[in-house]
Length: 248
Image (cartoon, rainbow, N blue to C red; front, side, top):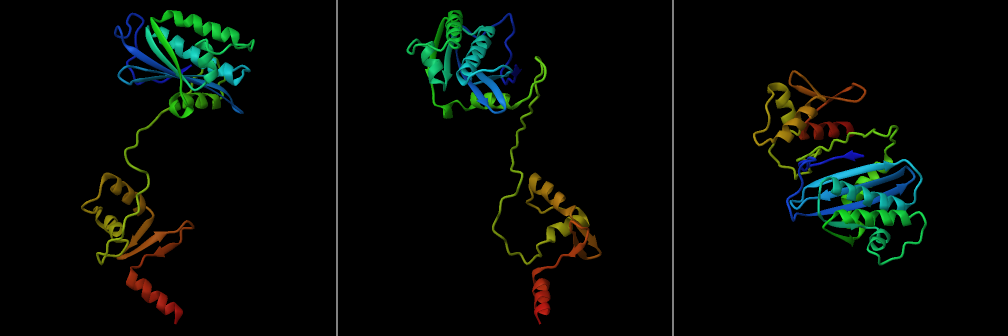
């Protein structure tokens, strides 16, 4: 089981605050890559503690859903949570556990019985069916784990989620006419390592990356082509003049 948490991990000798109401969302995924399950405990402060596992045995979609539900319930028990709201997008699992639907499939009968037994550990527990689009975190965890090839029983891939506050590419802005050539900022950076006055950190980084593709020889700026041919950079007036000469 791979665990990722942004909540303070609860130790064996402590538990949540008395009367704290937690939530559990679960989901199972079965596809051509394999079977995966995901569950996420949500604290009263909206802190998320996700769990995910790959099922390395043959199972049906409904079995995977039950496995995900049980994994989440056992995690809640280990965290000594006593009041729990359980959410899943599998109508079959939710309504069978609530006793509103009869459990007939021989492979699902022991699963349903085990879930009912686990509910005895809680002072209060309720089960709710939700649409798949409202169960995105658990669904993503289940899908992710179903796609990993786990070779050993205790192998867990490390997943790093980075935070990016600015876009990778620059947005297109309306051109400002300032009587300067399009390569003015590039040339000035190569000459004096100076940036435009209103340049942000992202703008400066982009300018440095862009300038690495150019070469300055005296006062003439060249762009390095992919085949290492140097292309001379010209402003609009010079470009218009060259085009006129070519067509004469």
